[in-house]
Length: 167
Image (cartoon, rainbow, N blue to C red; front, side, top):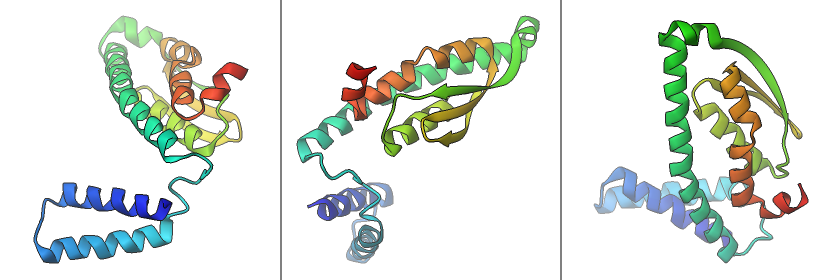
């Protein structure tokens, strides 16, 4: 079942992004997607204990997470602009490395969390090792925002809702 789902998702992406609907391009898409499904089906949906209903819920929750993350990126952009363009911002700038112990357990949830941090201006995930994540931040404001745990909680709500009850 999972290889079929992976193939369909890849083929839909191929069709949407290529914009070509002739037999040649669709044939190339089918061949390419079959090959990629064959070599990488274990990477997508690694945890096969979840059913299709749970996966669809995760996909929907992730799609709802994207606008929230986009807003956080906008806010961080405004802050970084202030840091770069004002004397007060220059005085506030204090780059440092912050170490976070995450509550997330799965590698995929940690991957989404680390990439969400890196997408946010003024922060870069430097290292993820086990439950420890090292992040470079540009200011105290960004550190406080990161340590508030908002991104981590949102990611946990999507991929590991049971973790929030335990924490």
